[in-house]
Structures are given as C-alpha cells and as structure tokens.
Length: 343
Image (cartoon, rainbow, N blue to C red):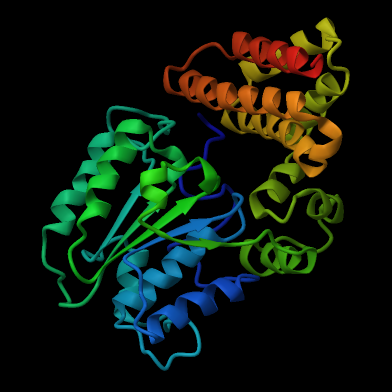
C-alpha cells in the first residue's frame, strides 16, 4: 500500500539498519557480545529480543559488520570504519557472506507479505552449504522471527540444529517468549531494553534527523515506550488519530459504542498499512495493561487477555495475508475484548 514502508525490515522515516552505523542506548548488549567474542564463547545463534523500534536490527548489522571484517579481539566496540570494504558491500547488499531473511516485495506481489515465505527460509540451506568468500565467518540475520509462520520456523530450526563452523545466526524477535521453544533452546538470549527519553531524543535528532522544534515531539517521546517506531507513529496525524479513536472505544468496554466502533472500522477499511498497525498497537497496549498489576487484574482477566492476544495475532496475519476486509476484523476484536472485560 502507498503508506507501507519500502522494506519490511525498515522503520518508515528512518535509515535502513544496514546503512545506519549509529547505535544509541544499547551499550550493555554490545559489551555482552564483545565479551563473548573475546572469551572464545561465541554462541552460534543469538536471540536478540525486545520491543520493536529500539535498535535490534541496527545492533545485528553492527555485529555482522564486525564479524565479517575479521573482528579484532582487542576492539573496544563493534565499530567498523565507514570506508571498510565490508561496510560498503553490506550497504550495497552485495556481501556474499551475509544472508538476510526478511519480508520483501516480489514481482508476484506489490505489497509486503505478512510473513517471510518458507521458500525464502529454505534458501539458508544453500547459503550454509557454500564456502565463505573471505575464508572467515558467515552471518545470517533473521528480521524477524515474529514474521515466520510454523513452516518457516521449522525450516529455520533445521539450519540451527547442525550449523556449519564459523556461522553466526542473529535472530531478531520482538516477542521472544512467543518464539518456538525448540528455536529458543538453541540460542543464547540477549535482551535489548527500551530507550530512555534522552536516548530516544538523540536517535530522533542524530539518526532520523528530526528538528527539536517538531510539534508534539516531547509528548510523542514520553508516550512511545522507548521505541523510535512508536514515537514516529505518534507524530503521524493519521496514526495518532487511529490510536486515539481505538483507545476511546476500548475505554468504554464492556459497553460498546456502536457509532464510534463503526466509524473506526470504516476508517481502517479505507486506510493503509500504517493505520492498521496503529490499531493493532493500541489493542496490544490495552491487552498488556493488566500485566503491570497482575494481582489487581485477577487470573480470569489475565487468561482472557492472553486468549484474545493469540486470536488477535492470528486474525491480523490472516487479514493481511489474504487482503481481507478489515471491518469484520475490527468488530471481532472489539467483541472479544468486550467479552474478556466482563470476566
């Protein structure tokens, strides 16, 4: 759709992680990776977890550049000079020792698919069977595990089970707890944290290029949960309006305001991918709220929200994959939430 990002692994309005050499606020993760490398404890697969928009993909590309540039064990950081041949090849997507699994637009489809096709995942077999062009390491980045269906996850698992030597898997997950257990068990988990407000301000200014006088910038940063992507969404009038309308409908549950609900559904049916994502995020925030005070929510409410969360994820993927009418989806989600609110 016209407002969909050009690439499925890039936050709209920001540089692609393969071109962004700046990582702000994730020093602890970088230190953990360097410590493993220096100590000869480099696990073959790393599960890089944390909310969307906090720098996980940027971090993964930093690690990839470092490893493919024959990482110096004495290095103080993962930085690789901008003029290094590896950096230039990765930016040009021409480094044969790096394989990236992500959602892409193909000649057969003009919009981004909701999942990474299993046929793409199976291409890792050919990559892993080849010899490193440089004679050194090879790196596989998966961005993200959340976008693999069951078939894709099982295909990836086969590659993880018996990896060739000197191959590094960097697996990005926005919800690592929902990753296939057999994949999690084969990875070292490395969690990245949401950015602090000062760190997020720096990213928006120094990486994204936003002016400090951007209207509502401070409010967007405060409400973003430490995510660059969410901050930018809150600065977009359409996405902010959808989130506001969604929150207004959800605030009245278990009662349903039919007029407001139909207006919201009409808006999403006519809107693009960004508006649909804004609706999903507002619903996810509503579902996650009881987790902050589980003793107050009660077991029944928590179980009901978990049930709706699973249903939401499946239905959203199907709606996107098959280009289904979004109005029935919105009605179904709100009805399920109303039922959960009565428990």
